[in-house]
Length: 223
Length: 85
Image (cartoon, rainbow over all chains, first blue to last red; front, side):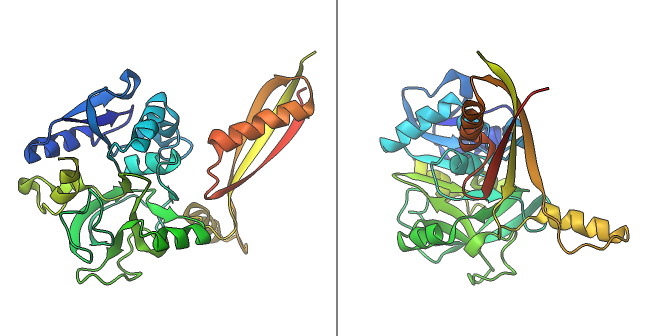
């Protein structure tokens, strides 16, 4: 029962994730990407950071490393995979999930708490919440604006594969509550099997001594 | 017989996709007193490679664009191949 937190050169939320898992009593270890996916892994967390310096596009290089071939194959066999922030960018770049995360509408790096509405509570990552629940989790990204072709967005919506949307404290989906200009306020999406990616950081909303613990339920999806 | 080519791959955002960096750059030009209607930015990659002919060089550069240099969700790209000097 060990979750693999995959570390690339430039990952920097790997240790935060490890501490969050430790707090939750979930066995996890940091895995250097060149060492490959351990055979006994029970889940994969792609952590935040700036893999490969965000060169070319955020997540583009890490998405094409050999370990991501292993992650894709394992995901097809049902392994739970969650990408957070840079991990979400890697997830989209590797084809685990649809769409792309690109430069914020503000053209700035933004680090702030945001509200998320749970749009699909029928995933490992959201089964501890109810659809419509509003949680507070921080974002910290410069390239978090979700983009997707219009027809693919319709498919995403009709297949109920939007995980979270940015909202205000009451759960209203408004442009003012959209921190980065994401299409349809999308903050996280679901892929095939038990795969999801999200730009906000649940591991930064897990330890009680640093503020909100609303993100705990997301990471408990690995339990 | 292999020939040396330079393949230039230009990657740009699809029309309609917001480009905040270009918008910021445009505003900076306007602050300098320039008049302009719009500004679009693009990434340009110059690839030196040896191939049997121009078509083979273009094909390889296109595959590089498909596999890594462009993201089809947000980008269009074009490839131009010239024989190297």
